[in-house]
Length: 148
Image 1 (tube, rainbow, N blue to C red):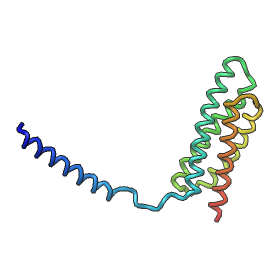
Image 2 (image 1 turned 45 degrees about the vertical axis):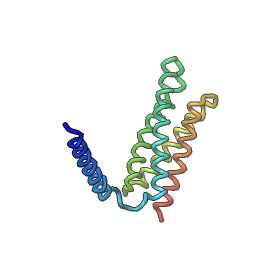
Image 3 (image 1 turned 30 degrees about the vertical axis):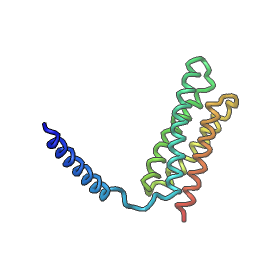
Image 4 (image 1 turned 90 degrees about the vertical axis):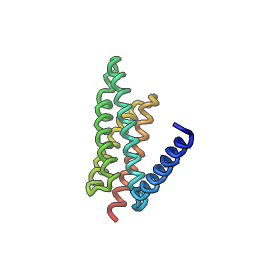
């Protein structure tokens, strides 16, 4: 191919890309910014789900080493993670079920935090408890916001 032909092909390609970019902007999200209450709650729930799943794994390893006193906490963490995950998804899409999901999530987080706080010297479990407390607070704030 001659350099003139290569230049022509590249120019046509560049024009095509520019056209696609302009066209893609027309399909970009044009709605209002997400409500800060919903975003804050969904993020807190998602963060808590990650901490609880990680703490479940941590507790499972401790149970495997013979520390049976972590069995209840292990189960509370994995169950709390499930509820947090559900709440995060419902809240993020502004579901009509956000309030009951947040109510259940806050209660589960309270229970999970209490379980983890029993092991005061375990930094992993302390981080999980803090995330649960933060999530419960965000969920309760969300419930208040939805009531208005």
